[in-house]
Length: 233
Image (cartoon, rainbow, N blue to C red):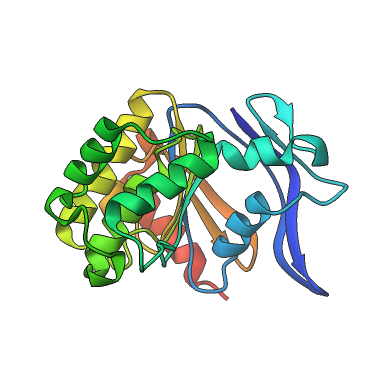
């Protein structure tokens, strides 16, 4: 479903992400792990920026080019450390703006209600986003990022700022996407919350892929071995 051919990321003369050749299938949740400076965020950045001329990104078999870049972005959902809400708009208005931007039509009232219900925010429907706690904002951001049902969901440290209800919601959403044949890539510093749903674990160190482990082989021994590699100089 998603194929990366020689994808890399440089910032000036600094090689932040060395060339990667990877393929991910529909219905998977992929965890990308590593210490600070490992290249995790650069990996995400490489997926969200136009690929270098000597690298390729293919989604559903289609190479991403200048001509279809907009379609590619429209088929991606993204959640970062900051959910990027319009703080002066209400919870419902934040959903409506996002939906109309991506789909060019008004959001069905039933979808607004369902999304807010799942986020535990139905009673805060008309409250401005700035009045929400950080955990509430993150929950609203999760639901908002999936309104257009993207094939590819990119999450950058999604646990950061999430309350327990939000963590439960996140795992539930990832499990549903797995079952519906959607792909999710999760940048995270810890694998623990994602063990129930992850299909594969990638470990990065100094911009290089040092371990690629399927969930079926992700035993305690394999986890510890990968973490030992990260500690080596």
